[in-house]
Image 1 (cartoon, rainbow, N blue to C red):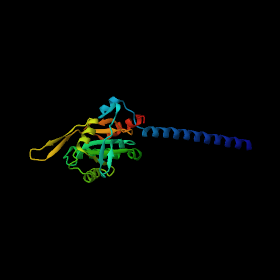
Image 2: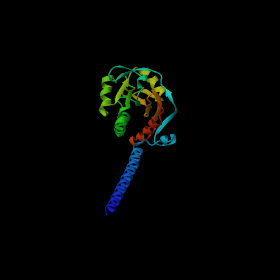
Image 3: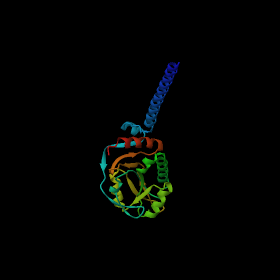
Image 4: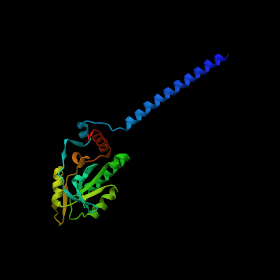
Length: 222
């Protein structure tokens, strides 16, 4: 009888061990699946274009230019190094494109996880330095998001910087007096090396931007 109980106990222990092993395997598979879901989906350059993003075949080195940050400190374009930076050229008196773009960039920024946001900057480069002084520019961009930054500077230096990123802008006189600024609507992506890496075409879509941005980051050989 004792041997019979011993055999039953061994059988029960064997079943428990088998169940535990199966549970561990299931949890491991589930953890791997969840981890994979959290990883960026790598997409081709053609898929990037379909989703509104154009990646340069070879990132372009940006000549170092002295500008001015919204805290009135000197800013050099080499200071873009260390983070991914989304750059939009605009101005605070812009009636439609600029506020719409900054609002969309805010929505995009909020979709990113905390660690991705920590290594992502969003910068408005004002092409209207005579009216957009640093303090006013800083207040304007932070209205959309407290983490956004503004940059301005000498008009011709801004023009030189924008030309390197293929963003056109021109001062246009108005019939009733005053002026406005015509400017490109694309958002430029600068990589952590400080090089021009890609651009997002208008109209911007936060979901598509997140998809392409995460893929570009995942394939970047930094």
